[in-house]
Length: 379
Image (cartoon, rainbow, N blue to C red; front, side, top):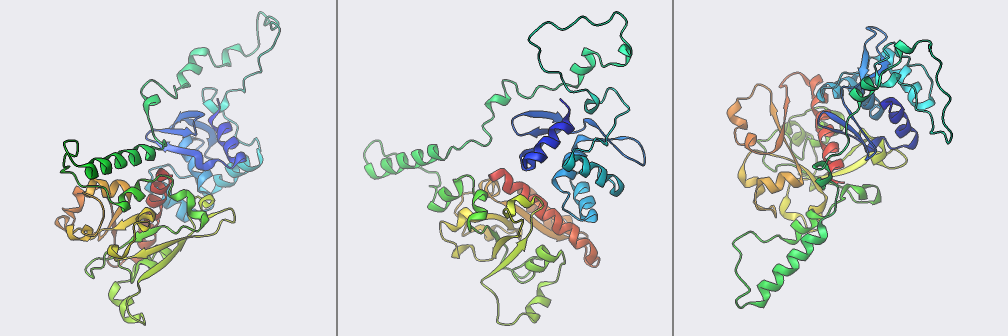
């Protein structure tokens, strides 16, 4: 199967968001799986070399970005970026089916001819001396490009399944034992899940974004951190880091309770059918969150101090950073000791320069890229 044909089919159906990078493979929903490094018939006009499948898929999913932002995002993901002259050729092929991607290498998967439909009668015998038979791909060459999609281990993968009913049943049984007393009511030394933790366990949080549910981003309330509620809007929306002290002096009316940040996600489908921006609510007081609010928390900017999580309804850092994605923003020339505690947590370290403000946009773009990827995994 030609991976470019599959990619174009997914683009025609509007299912590009179902294509997932999984390690060294690219999964097309539950239909196909190809190695990300598979060469395609999409070749560079400058070098003549074929682009890998990862470059074609990344361009298809991120073609709404400006070319400079696209190059930065591709390099952050360690994907070969498609050059500007090649973009139009590939996008025309993707959108309109223009057959403008000839392949000179008969061994490339994208150069294989489509399979003929199965006939109901025996085919006529081939001529004794077919023309060009030596140039046709052999069965061994075709099998070399094949890759099994599932095996007995991958069939046991429960990713995407809903186990909330099991959690609810276990919590109900736990409450019955605790209220019943007697011999069966053995005390539990483990941390009992709160209502907020149960709310966070419910899957498909992001699926309701277009239905009026606003995701929450938490920032530290301490002033010694780089990202606070004063400057988070400029950093995430405009890609510019402004010191909190400057924003505090310029801000009128005191410290805000919350800040609204709007961003058009890289995959515009998640912003609604109209392709508008998604709104995020930024807060710095976890104690003010209600139990239902914790189900909307998707990210946190960490300070690197244990006391930041004292009002959180989870037992440890492992559980916290399995449920929300963490970011630690630091100056690139700060000492390693400053991030010693953070490196023990499952958070993403974002480095910015003290003076080169033009590099802030790349850092902010990495935050959005990681956050969107995390939100897709929670769906």
